[in-house]
Image 1 (cartoon, rainbow, N blue to C red):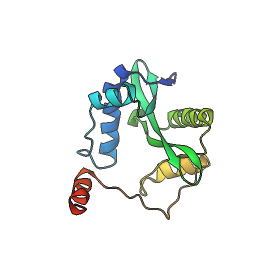
Image 2: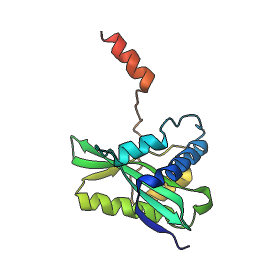
Image 3: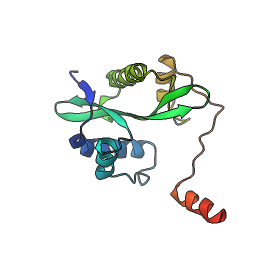
Length: 160
């Protein structure tokens, strides 16, 4: 397949949001996506750039993305977080996931980060296998902890 990988542009965000929605459906949470194309444009290409996104393109269609953003580890120093590595259903098994992950690792190396981290659902065995084959450490003894918007509001209300 003759796909290319490049840095995303603001005009790509309509197709990017489509892939995000495809991932949410795969992960059995189709209603969970609240971010809009406009949010992605503002947050990725506005005055304060919050993320960097790579897109994979085939025949003028975006068929994969890798979205990363900076974090800081008190143990290691600068790191990046891979929020999503998405390959469209029709492109899985084509090598596109490896190509996108390669770009993320090269990007992190260029930035001099000490670690690249991300999460994977515990039932997504093909993804876990893929990451482990690439040398990633899938830390099954850690749990993801989050406060959603409602929980944040409740938390704030309870500290007053």
